[in-house]
Image (cartoon, rainbow, N blue to C red):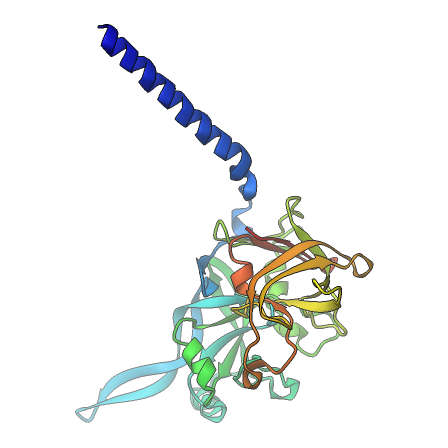
Amino acid sequence: MKYNLQNFKYVSFFLFVVIFLILLYKSFFGKSHPQITSNDDKNTYDLHVYPWGTQIMIKDLMTSSHTGDVINNNFVWERKPQKYSGFYQLDTGSHLLTDLLMMSRNDLKNNLDKHGVKYDDLHSSGYAYLQGGTPPINIHQDVRVDGKSHRMPIGLMALGEQKNMLREREIVNGVFGLAHIHDGHPLKNYAVTDVLFKTASKRSIMIDFKNERMIVGHPVPTDFIFKGKMHYDNNIMRMDVFIVDEDGNTNKLLVDTGTLYSQYLSRGPQTLRGADDKGSKGTLKMHNAKILPRELVGTGQKILGYNDLYHGYMYIDYDNDMLYIRQN
């Protein structure tokens, strides 16, 4: 009996130590990313977060896609405008919602004309997705974004022979641009952000990668590690903030979820601090900055990429042109 009682004491002490260590861990480390809550279901969207990108699902989007039929005893493929569901990559470096199509621009226009589909040709805007594609052909459509009904401007973007974009098309149906378009710009009628803001009390978007949600109209967070004033020259948003690097140089840094890897002027880990005189404060980390080949992105790129963002959150305050970031 004495032996069992002594064992019981040892076991009790061991359990006490384990519970104490668990509580201690939660106390110090469990606060690294507080739960971001929202009771506004109509402005909360489920995200699908992967190491290579974050996606949102859109249903009933009309595009020009292949369909097959038997004609004169032969199975024939043809392109036809029809609805489908797809996954679109959140891209803070882009401004439009675009469906990426593996066809030429002339073939796309001819196909829409053949079936009597009305559209706006954005060729005169010159707008095209950065790595390839062509100026989109836009059609306002009734779609459901994560089950929520919206009438949205959808750009059909032909990729032509852009090899890099054709490879990207294997895992994404298109791009959901979150950079805002201000009044007075020719593309204003095609701004996706304006559609999202119609039902929100505040013009803001919280991209909560950690909890796989996007919340429109969310209040400004308080647990950010960096905040920065966006600096751009015209009425079409570019998410550039000023930072000071380890050599004391002040540079503009693009915050872009559409770029997979962070890029800087030198390779490897980078610590970037806010530039107080430019409206930015806090610290950002690049865990392994890259310098991509010149033929892909040119030279001198300074980008905080998706790989250094998707473990935390990114909050965009469109009214005040401010970015708030938490990296984990």
